[in-house]
Length: 407
Image (cartoon, rainbow, N blue to C red; front, top):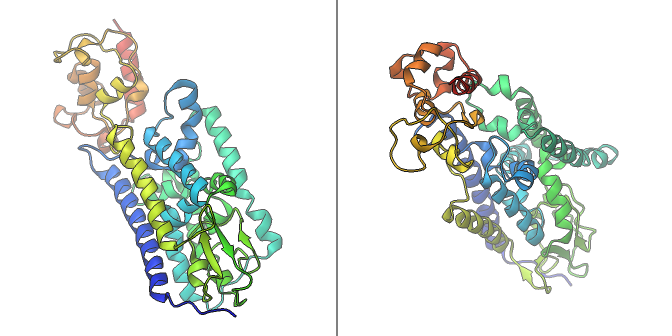
């Protein structure tokens, strides 16, 4: 005979903590990406340096040459590694417990719960093959990126679009990504976790790894009362009520099914060895693992929280060359770099002409004369003045390369 659960308060607390963690992840990452656009002093890192999929995108370049694809960094590799560890321990828990885009879809899904008394279902004939699309997205964009050595997915990425939601470049650079974001959020109103189910490449590689996860969800058929509450609660539409063990690669370890189950012992998260673990502990464990990894990487200066200055970028890439002594102080600074070999690809739009002049040794007045920028504007980021004075950072890179090649 089944016994009714009496831990209603604990289950609600578990749900609240999970949503607080997801909300915090969304707010934190949105704040950083907005700050990246508007803060120029100690500029925060961009979205690509703080995205797990960016780690996969730059993995081949890092292994083969020890460098990173433009806009990515070691921080992306750390997060990529973190999601892999989480998948091996607690399935696709990054998706269900920490992903900011997942949180955004989840919030829209909550709105959908209020709009629809009964959610419509995607017919199985369409749903099953459509869920394979995310694996195609994973393969196509990973191979394409590794071959091109650039972030080819960026214009199509809904998270990159969200990160640039207030940017003037939103529709010019991320138009397709905005469309994908719109479809994903609108789809989540009706079907919930729309992007996660059908298009997310991060979800795809985590799904493959989750097959060998240490933690799993098990159903006790003797304790189950066949109420179907678990099926209704699952945002990924997994048939939990008929499974002995939830091994579907679609499971995002949100544990909504466990929290919704009214029968004691009928549905539980099981750790290695068979002991039960509360959903709250799962959330704490998942957040703790990722925070520990990020904290450790930050402590050893292997996590990029801010964009490097040109001088720092030059140092990270093994030195560069200028035109000779610029009056800098100390060995290893721009003044001590031998002529020849400056990598102009290190010049980015958030850098200033004054900064480039200092590192390369090109007199600042030459930048003013060439690009028509007054000297009092040379210290401003190029992206902020390019439209006013009619140049692009690419023009500056080309000119610097030509100028340094001139004796």
